[in-house]
Image (cartoon, rainbow, N blue to C red; front, side, top):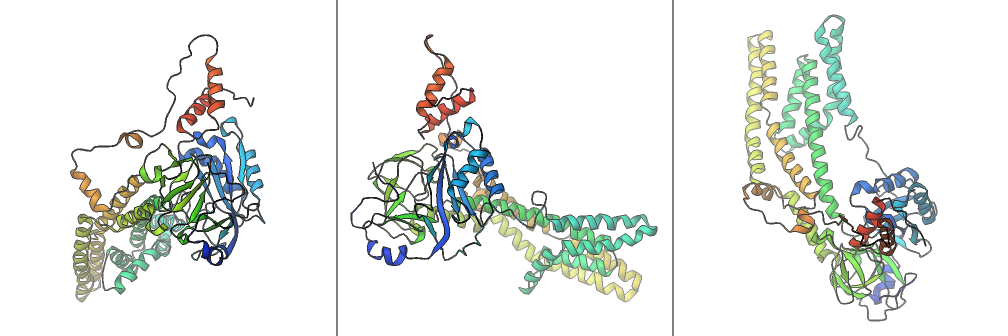
Length: 521
């Protein structure tokens, strides 16, 4: 086993990067944030993200962005890694907040495993990072209200309803001007898209909706203009939400790539946190409990269990020892530090190839999507041309005739708009890709998703696919009268509590479910 303490390792073997280590990586600019690790014993029994909500709520309510830049939870390794400014927030303060907030035996002991300030684990300043401007997990999304419903859409809807009240007549007639407010709040995003499309000498559904809305305004049909603005802003909102969900689901896979690596200097034995992308082939990196393997490599020292579920889908941790290969993005869930010698850069790793597949999947369009786009490009100009003649030529026969046919021309623009096809088709594929990505399945774009409709027979791997990949205690029979069932569960929980093995976590969880009090003796 690797015996490494205080971030030092005794390896004195040749490190190809050691000559440039001090001049290039060790001396690179450092941010004001450090990385600390907190051990939460009860996390090992958690099986879904909702179980982690109490921890996330505590972190978001007690610390602000200047103190805590980001935090990362990993249940199998029972760790919380916090990127914090030690001048404003100490690691011990984070631990004390968790101890006070996570009351109950199910959370177990909460200990400070590594204090970034004490161990000088300062995070480097990344080239794409403005120290202090990075978006973190403590920030809330802006510009939305009521679970993502934009305030501008709500105001547009209110103005639309007010404009409809003008149909009552009398003094209510003045409410028709509220339709102008619906245009002001609902149409700006559509106008911007329409302008960008028109600059390319093209026409799409956005151009048609802008034409219909402002044409209705010119005719004095304020409630009609408000209807177009509000209803189309609703469709834009639904499309945006579906796209964001798809991007977030696929982005969760991209986030598997570690940002930093604990690089070991073979001469001094010290560890310095460096950007993972700058770790050269042949370097030694330290992978502690809860750390991600920064690049593909071979275990140089240490024996521990590694969680490879994010890469292979296999839920059970794999034991790794000296000479075994490890994959970038896998996480050390054991209690022992691993020292890995990299055999590839971050860009050439298995995880990077997986991310490349995900990015290609987002750009891979199906034949149906291409057909719809091709149809809309030819169909939209024809509709606009017909509507143009309807809105202009009849005015030669008088104002009343002109207004009548101009209104009909605008109605044709709205009715004949292909937005039902051009919006629903990509949203459908995005929703499908998102739904599968959230369940750990990567489909390489809409064309592959469409091809699945012709599949007649499916062959699946069982563990982690058909099953959840997690164990549970279904039955426990006690033979004899020398010990009770509760006492047996208590003893099992005491013995298996320190272990991170899935079966150990199952026994501990079974004891807690049965209400067994675990003593400290």
